[in-house]
Image (tube, rainbow, N blue to C red):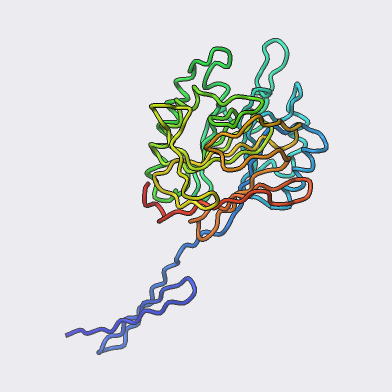
Length: 325
């Protein structure tokens, strides 16, 4: 009768299983690599321009050596995208864009949006991609609805976002979903109002599919909300998770919304503070998102591009990887 002894040796990232029979010595060694996600950085900012301040922001971003750069719209502020594309040339392979109001084509005059899409090999201004265990969705706010009368226009975009988030929410290798776009769904009182039609259209989808973080621009300042859930009874008054101002254990509490229209343009004053906003201020800089602790934690830091100071910091931690997806 064959009898075997099993020995398991765990060393570094290898599990070695040894089988030794009591008859002829037979040794079978099986190695299994335990995958561990490396830390990586994502940076995000919108409302750039091509001046000295936007160059300072770029230099500060380069210092972080990010793997992904999210440009949240209003890029060159010129009739062509050339100056901004030249500005971000050192990181162009890492850049993903959203189209802002000042990036749109103007019939008979110039075609900025068309040129941006061509430069980044995009067929549409809304799209998605994965990096490590993060799924990103670019929301094209300027084509999603009519800026003039506030009516939803692009049903194709809505269908794409719905289907894409649904798919991402079921992927075992995806633990975070980040949506980024230009026009804000929520905002403290400042130069531009939040978009009610975008909020009412997309925030229910974000709750349904477990979106963790929504990045937005358009207002030239920094704002970070508590985790928010859509409130159908009073949409402009979301349900707020007040459990912590700086640390959130991600669950059914809704996404955090961050406004970072801070890359280079002159900053906007606030005329008040929304109750769902944790912190807000006027400084140029960018949001740095460090994905750490084997992909289970997002460390959000707003970095002042003039002096490198960290002006706001927040942690979002998963209770368990892929538990809700």
